[in-house]
Image 1 (cartoon, rainbow, N blue to C red):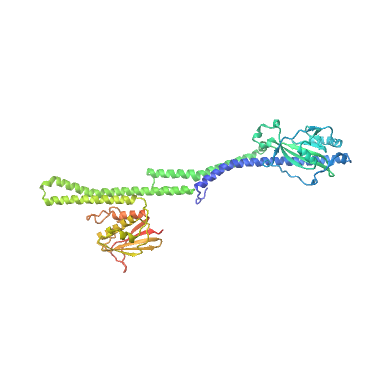
Image 2 (tube, rainbow, N blue to C red):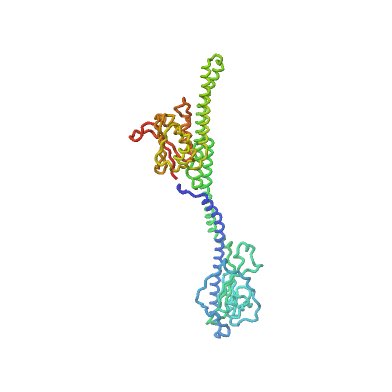
Length: 522
């Protein structure tokens, strides 16, 4: 069971799975290669023991057979030879050259008579030893005098190993098996195509009286695995467990979370749910994707609700003037000839007023749609520059600047100008004569405080002033879209606007409207 707070990157999961897929067969091959080399060294160790035993036996028999050692031996050429030093296995298939097959030797005239005598005594011992190794004992001339295989009486000095052994050197070599003797599976098992050759001199009183040559094909991996089948089954079980664990890990971190995210998104799309499941994702990318999809679903639902409410409000706002226009036209159609000029002018003025209201509503709706749907505008501005460059803000209200009006704000000049114009127009329409704009830093925000001295906003209406179409000046032509547009423009620049209820302090007026505009400082 994965810890609930552990999350992995999707890239990490994929890399881990790929490494498992790569490492398992490579590791298996390497293990087999190492095991194959271990089998070769095991065979070499066995042959070293054989040669040491046979050399000791032959040396003991030679010592008893003759006292004239010089006539039946040769000088020891290797001055570093130490019969008491224990030989170690050194062969490795990975870095040892494999030589040509061992020569069969050539027919010799006659061997040393003492060596032949001792060889006759040693031969039954060699033949009785239960071993798969071919063991040959030569006299000091390299002629085979005892063996448990073929080749008795042949001269083996044509083999480099035998010639070196007669000089007092101990050698271990790998040689290829003759082509006709190779088993059919040597293409898959390299160890089955080689033969381990171990030679040792037979030294008596610093004189070489002969040499021992032992050769054997090492056990193959197939044969070794046959004897280790229970261990092999355990390894296969372990490998299967690793594969299953990898599959479970991939399922829990990738497949199942993706399926859950898809199902959750489908339920939201079908209307059966309102939220995306964002919990229990083990990979960071999937957690981020789920959070993004959840945010998108929430935004779409909010947008849908907004469009639904806006459509309902538009229908209501347009229905009143359209109904009035329809009634006016009906009255004019029925009584136009009976009306006085003053009555006709009254009805025509009503029609003109309703048309003007529809035109104003249409224009404001377009402005609200552009403010809501536009991408975040790039650019910066400041209050002082906007007020200095905007002559249309001069609406009879005395605008006073305070604080630091030159501070740079993360909003384009056109949007800031539109927001300030809406606030100035609202102040004028509510009887304000002065408008104070104060710009200052407040924590990690730059705050614009806008205060007017007008009639203010009733406490019961304060919570609804940013709702589209909410207005207290409907009879005077108000559309109720100004503050909604201002809020949308500021939201596009990551800004906020809030209504601040009036205070009763000695330094601030208790009447008028107070707004707070905030921008997070860069």
